Image (tube, rainbow, N blue to C red; front, side, top):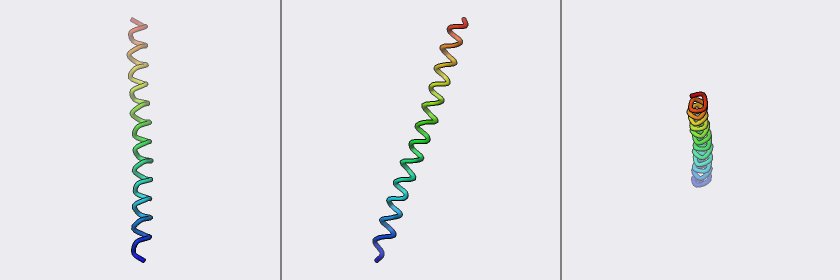
Length: 46
């Protein structure tokens, strides 16, 4: 009887970690894109 809730908690924790990882990856990608766009635009302006 003790097994099911523990397994469900592990699945939930895994899902949450994957979701958080995806959000962090998206944020990092956005930051990189913004930095690249800023550098390119400054180079073009110069």
